[in-house]
Length: 233
Image 1 (cartoon, rainbow, N blue to C red):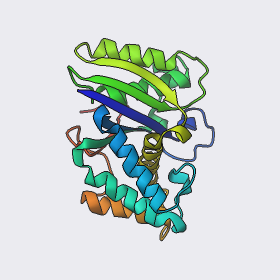
Image 2 (image 1 turned 60 degrees about the vertical axis):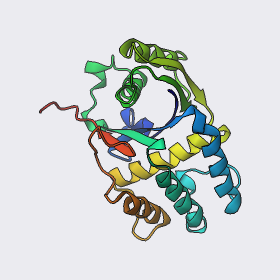
Image 3 (image 1 turned 120 degrees about the vertical axis):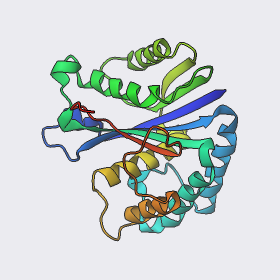
Image 4 (image 1 turned 180 degrees about the horizontal axis):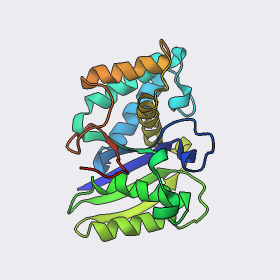
């Protein structure tokens, strides 16, 4: 099976910030069959046209005037069932020891967690293409190294590419941004009472029948991996 994965993140600066604005760095991914890409894109564009949404849509643009669009977008996401899946990893920045485990390199540590987010959903005999929202890296080979490590760790699968895409060029990256922002806002307690963002989070939680929180690996629709870096069992 040929699959595509679209990725984005929230609060990537947490590993270096002296005044962190949140607890969890979130890296998220949207998973779909390649054969479904055009259909999903057409559906999203139809919703944008219906609600007269011009330019990019993203979590930071959620507002009362656009509540109808984002509510319908999340309803559409839910209606696709397991044909359209989301997985995120939540990293508590206070638990991250860059010096001991990541060569005191925040960029290296970031991509190691990217690997953890992707690796456990890669299955034998499938082919994958991974598209990440554009991020300016100190080293240009980060995504090439990520692809190489994923291929080494998944010998029966094939990762054809891991490349950056600017979000304005991909509605699927924009969809990922919304879901990443939604998960981040819930886990980081950033939802103001009565706001449009609280409203669409509540809408999706109602569709899921549960609060957005850490899930077991077997959860396929909206999976949240809250990694524990302090050990234990």
